[in-house]
Image 1: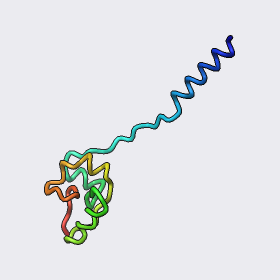
Image 2: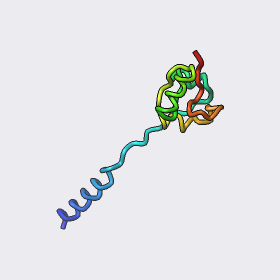
Image 3: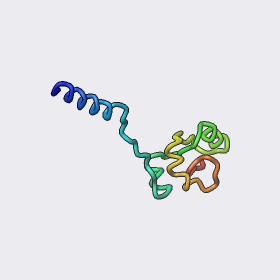
Image 4: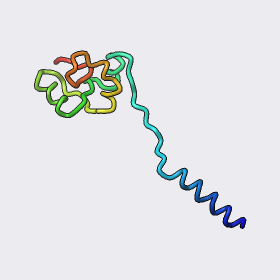
Length: 87
């Protein structure tokens, strides 16, 4: 009986611990200066948005969909790139 109870406890503990991944917090920035400390040439929503910035005369921004979504309030012109810097 003790062995069966111990086995049941082990199975429950293992089932609770398997498949649980730690949550990764996406950083949010208060303003464009704070964002530029980590991403000097902005953050783009997609690779296509990053390419559009280069074609239009800006530096190539970093690509991070999660960072862009968390900071989309910093994209004033809604072009898919937050806080772009012109050359």
